[in-house]
Length: 365
Image 1: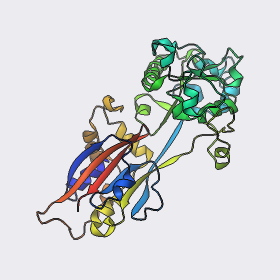
Image 2: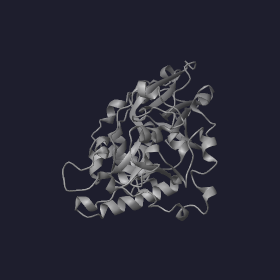
Image 3: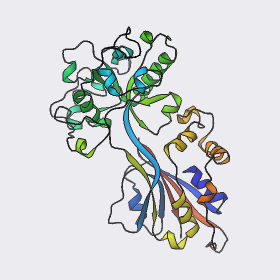
Image 4: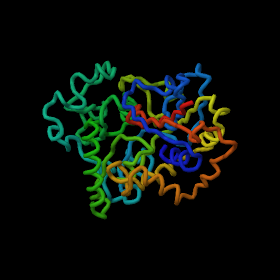
């Protein structure tokens, strides 16, 4: 979105005023209805109500998805989940089960993260808030049937049951994966990912001694730049699989990946005629996952990236060095500007969810 703003300012001459919103109740489609604040949204994960014909939406090009991730250094990361059912790693018949790459159940002491059991990310009150009718939290974990009496199960880390809403718990159950699901809270999960990735990076070159971690996250996200990771391959998402979903893991038949979600961009239809240059840039502007990850590699660690630049600096650097011919996004016709010779644009940023920051641009008539 910073790239889009830079092109608006430096190539099309719009003057930008940035306004930041942090309320989830502030939605794009409500702002789009206000004729005095026609919002252009470049990061919209949810669909706009179809009744709002005055708003045009198009895919931006980025596809988001949630999943189970492991370090790239872990051998199972490049293989199908079925490897976790095998008793031996095919490339080394003398080695032990691939589950040995993951921390055993009980490896992490949750009292190191939480002062008492009531503060666990998954506690006695959690099932009712999530919608579970049968499942319970046991010592901060959800335990699938295959691990109830199995002491060989390992730990799979999530931040909170509300993030997965039973999807990946059901995947673990229905695929027979030998994992306890341990909930650490967001900061606890990030700390654990950092610790285990460092251990994996420092691990022995002997395959039997390599360390790994399995955890829930999403993409695209700069965490995968900081800590080289790969999504564990499980059966692809399908509508048939989705039709078996229940928030209660014990009732759910889900055994597939989560549904991919296309990132959308939206613009009031009226701007197509009133601001043709702005509309042309919006319509042509597109990025895919790889290009977004290129930008994230430039951002500093304070933003979760792998470089040392601010967002503004990273956007400028990407425009200077990218192989993307962004000049094709631009189309300059007869200017339509106020009497003072400038165009005024309000740039608004709204946090909709942890999945993404929603960026709003509003043109003041």
